[in-house]
Image (cartoon, rainbow, N blue to C red; front, side):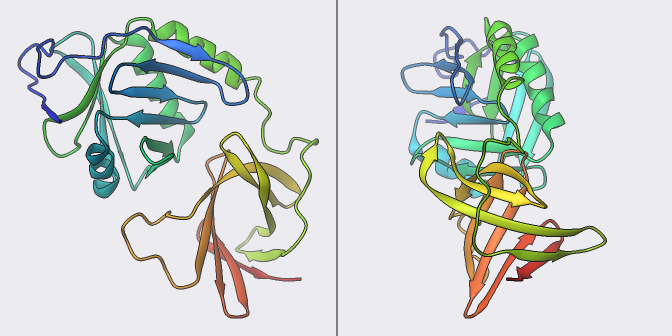
Length: 257
């Protein structure tokens, strides 16, 4: 159940209390800093966050509105900053049937969020248009967990890893002043969250597939899948009859082999 957020009073009350739990860190293929309570979880990965609210209706509400207010508080009553995640700067979607995943278009935005989480006392995830909270989290110990996350993410293999096999199949060509050649491959066995690879002009990166990229809106005719690259790029794959193309940025790339 959503809790009404009152900026003029303490949030440490029964109806709107922050989640008291210790922050943890998990390394491995998908490093993450996290805090988990009986009914809510917040997970910070290298380039995105995942929030599992107390109930599935809240996940649906966040994704339906395509907005989430990320508020930083230095104590129980004083807000010192916020970030409004929405369609103009992030992709919000439900993953694994429950958590809301927020993928930021600009890595600087996510780094700002990590900085604020590490520096403050309370995190309030709420509706962007009104004072209604989806969840409150205690940030004690978050600084250490985020330092571990950043250290691990710095050593995570990046795009263009020479050990990654380049895809072979349909090739897409086009672009504006900068011409590009794009290929992709859906993997038979996912590597953690990454279940595809994309090659652009010979450089290969991991990607995540999104078949419900447009949320509740009707997808354009011919839409097949969205490929969300680990560098936060987005490739929309289309097939309509004998026509195959990819939309990337402001350009369309048509099959050329």
